[in-house]
Amino acid sequence: MEIRKTTKKLAIALIVVVIITSPIIYWMLTPSDYIRAVIVDKTVAKPDYREHLGLIWILNHLKYKNKNNKKNFQEDVNYYGFFPSKETLTYDVLTMPETLPEDTDLIYLTDTYGVYNYDFYTDNVRGERSDIIYGGLEDEEVATIKKSLEENDPLLITEFNSLATPTDEKTSQEMQGLLGIKWTGWIGRFFIDLHRDNEEIPFWMIENWEKQNDAEWEFEGPGIALVHKDDTVLIFREGEEVGPGLISIIFTRQAEERFGVNKISHFYYWFSIIEAPRKNILAEYFFDVTDTGRDLLRQYGLKHYFPAIVQQTYPYRTYYFAGDFVDTNQIPFSYFIAGQPLLKQYFVPDIKGEPSNFFWNVYYPVMKTILDEDVKNYEPN
Image (cartoon, rainbow, N blue to C red; front, top):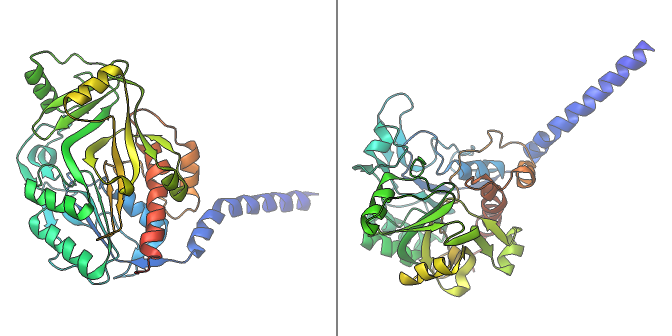
C-alpha cells in the first residue's frame, strides 16, 4: 500500500513537472532565425532601456538571433545611441556607422528624443526642460538609412519620437519623405489625471497653457493634452471636450485580419499627429470628441481622427508608428517560455493610463506579423 502511494505521488509530481516545463522545452525546440537588426535608441537616460526593451524581448521570444554572433539580442548592448553607466554618472555614445552592412534586415528607430541634463543627472520626474546632452536625428544618419534602403532593401520601422524636437526641421522633413508621411507639428498624450500635482505632467506644459490662456491650470481627472512645436497647448477633458472613449486606435478591416488584433484598442501614451496617403494607413487614432472638443480641434485645423500606423511599400519598405508603442517597463524576464503573449493578452487588464494591455494586444501581434512577413519571409520582387 505504501509503495502504491509513493508511486502515485511520484507520478503526480512528474506530471506537474512536465506541465510546468513543457512551454520552456517547446520554446527551446523551436528553430531560430538569424537577422541583422540596426536598433537606434537615443533616449536611455537611465539603464532601464524601456524605449527598446520590449522590442528586444519580442525578438528573443520569437527566436530571432543576432546574425553576426548567433546569440540572443541584449537590451544593454545591441543598439546605437546613449549608454548610461550603472554605477557612476558617466555615459558612452555609440553612433550609427556611415555605411550599414549589406545584409541588414531591419532598421528600427525606437526613440531619438535624447537625454537631457536634468534627466541624466537628477530624478527629473516633472520633465523640466534643460540643456541636451545627446539626441535628435542627424542628417548623416538619414543619409545612411536612405543609402541602405536604396542599395540593400531592409525594412525600416520608425516610431515616436523620431521626427520632433530636437531633430531639426530639415532633417525631420527628409525622414518624413523616406516614410511617406507628413508631421503636422502636433504631439499629444493621455493623462490619467490632469491635476497639476500629477508628476507625469511636465511643468513646461502647465506654464505654457497658463501663459497662453492667462488663467490658472485647474484641470482634474482623465484627459488628453495636445502640444504644437510652437508650444501651443490644448486640453481635452473627459466629460467636457472628450467622452469616455478618450483616444483609441481603430484598425482597417484588412489590417485587423492580417495582424489578428481587435478592431478597436485604447492608447494611453505619447503620440504624434501626422498625415499620410489613405491607401497606406493601417490604423487610425480616434478622439471620442464632444461638440466642444470638435470645435476646438477645428480652430487649429485638426480632425478627430489621424493615422496611427502607416505602411509604405514603394519606393522603400517602411512602417511608421505614430506613438510610443514599444515604451513599457513591464516586460517579463522569461522570454524563453512559449505561450506567454497569449496569456498576457487574456489576463492583462485594460486600465486607463497603463500601456501594458496595448503592448500585448496590439504592439506584440503587429510586430510578430511584420517580422514574419517583412523580415523572415520577405522575398524581393
